[in-house]
Every structure is written in structure tokens, then in C-alpha cells.
Image (cartoon, rainbow, N blue to C red; front, side, top):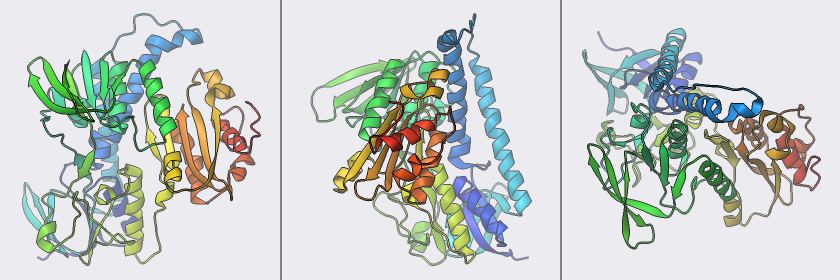
Length: 469
């Protein structure tokens, strides 16, 4: 009996693949999704966003109990860390959510196949699993395989002494000394987790600042705050080699500009220098799907590759942020386009969040980007130290910074370092989506007392009329 023809087959069940599959099914298409991991949710849900946030939340509560509750008049004696229980909670969060996606697939009648998928032709998807091989016929195929850990030359990941982000999520004990190679989102988040749980943490970054893709003022503030929490930083430094022993690792470091090297000894090394598109074993070469020099898959405005009927989304795409929520938007957009509807993703309004404490969030342009573009702009800032709710909560670190066009007052970028910044940034992403002015934000009534009042005050500050500072 021949396989039924699917309107679309998504290869990869991560945020882009599963969201796209569900949306396509909602629109009446016959849909299949193939995932090799054995559980849905991709890197994000299984070994990325979700387990890391579970550990960040648990470790934040532990840090509060051990260091911060006294100022609220709460005495806590005998606080103990049960790391095994913390890890078990993290695993349960992941398991519950992955099962939830399977239920959504059943609800929306998405055919879910566990196995390794590859393209036999542009309209045939070969699925290899323990039970044998199937070939799915498809009018359209969407590549949504995400990304994988970027290797670091001279540093071999063994997931024991030298770990990736995956290994750093399940260490059996807090290291005495953890070295994080890479000062981006992943490195700072996982470094924060283990610093809170008792590790000495050293961050080694090749560039001259952490969070190099964010606004420069934000990067400096975040580094200062993390240093206050006990993390140390070696900037403008590269790791050129590593020797793993039974009891630790010796790292060889050099200045980024060259010069004499040094050795740094530690218990565990976390390699967090970035991610690369996961395109191996997909059969792209055989059918002629183009990739660029770094392995990314170029697409047009409708997410079409150079091969008719084959599309790509998510971390496979060049020059776009590797973010789960961005992939979800693309998955939904490609589903709607394949169903004959209009759809697009506004890449200027994709927020990014670092879930340290305080959190860091940004959307739109940074000052450095505006300067490179010779775009005249104005700056409005407001510190959480002057925000009533932040004072009441004893979370006063950080600020809101807004950038607006000097002539039109249109909002161009927003940057927040502060409590719950990841939630607060949504208001500003919406503002960018609808091309509002800073005056629109300033004239919008914000409830009192809330952290979001700092957004209103920053908008007022653009015109020199902030009320509370």
C-alpha cells in the first residue's frame, strides 16, 4: 500500500517545526513531522531554553534563601542544596512539556514520526527508524532541524570534564571551578546557575566585552553586575588548547591579539562559543539544496530554498538570530504561506533575552548599529533605582534605555537590564511592530506601582521630562 501524499512534511520537531506543523494542520493541510530525537521540542525544550530556565529559577531561589531574604525580615536557617532533587524537577518540567506537544499533535491530527529524515528527492522524505524505513510523499518539505553546538578547535568536548551546554545542564555536583568559554547568552546563563550553587566561575571571551551582539552600555552593566555576584572575566582572550585529566582540565589561553600564553586550571570547562546549523545527513547535496560557506541554507521571502518545494526555517537561516521564538514565527509563517495566505516575520521586532539576574532584554537597534548606519537618534534612560516597585521588591539594579529617531521620534530600539526584563520587553516589541513613537509610549498610562513604569519614564526622558528622576 503506497504512502498517502502529505501537503507538507516538517523535518524537525523543535519550536519552528512543531509550531509550523500545528498551524498547517489548523489550516486544513495534511501534515507530518519527523523528529530524530525521540521527543518533540528540539534543542530548546529538551536541552536548551527550558531546562536551563528551570535551573536558573531553582538556583535563583536558592541564592535568595541563602543571601537575600534577611533584608525582608525573613530568617532562614539551615538552607541545604539538594542538587539531585533540583535536577529531577528540571527533568520533569521537560518531560511534561514534551508530552504536551505530542498531545497537541494528536489534537490537530499531525502525523508524528520518530526517526532520522533525509531527502530522497524534493518531494520524497526517507525516514529511517528502528522498525525499518518509510518514504513519505510530500508536496512541500520544510527543513526545521535547528542547530548544534559549535566546536572549538583544540578543545575536545567529552561531556565529562569538557562539556557543552547539554552536559552543563546535568553535572552531578557543583564544580569547585568552572571555566565558561564564551560570554554570550548560554555561557552567562549557565555560569550564573553554577555560581549560585557554589562554583567559582571564570568566563573567557575572545572579544573585548560580554554579550557582543547587544548594546555596548548594556554589556558593560551586565558584566559589572555579574562580577558583583562572583563571576570573573577574562576578555580579549582566546582558548587555544585543553588537556583533560581525571581530576580537572588545564586550559591554554592567549591574548586575542597574540602574545605569551598562560595556563588556567579548573574542574570543568563549558564550551559555549555559539551554534551552527544542523544540516548533516539530510541529503541536501544529493538534490542540490544550496548552503553558504558556513553551512546555512539561504531562502527567499517565502522561505523557499533554491530547490522547488523545499523550504527552510529557524536556525538554518543565515543572518538571523538563532532564537526559539523567531523559529516559531517562521514556522507559522511558512505554514500560512503554503496554505495560500499572506504572512511575514518582522525581524526588526524580534526580542532577545538573557535570563541572568537581573535579566537582560533587547529589541530593535543598538546604539552601535545606529551609529554605523549614520542614523540620528535620541536616548532616553530610566534607572530601576528610581522605580517604586523595584524598590519595594529590593530589585533595583539596571535600567530601561530607549532609542528613537531624532527627527520622527519613531522608536528604533529598546534595551532593558533589570528584574523581569524578558517580560517587559514585549511591550516594546509591540511598539516596534506598529512603528509607534516614543511619545506614544510616554502618553500610555502604566499601572502604579509596576516595573513597567520605568518604560514610560524612559520614553518621557527622551524629551527631558521624566517625572521621577
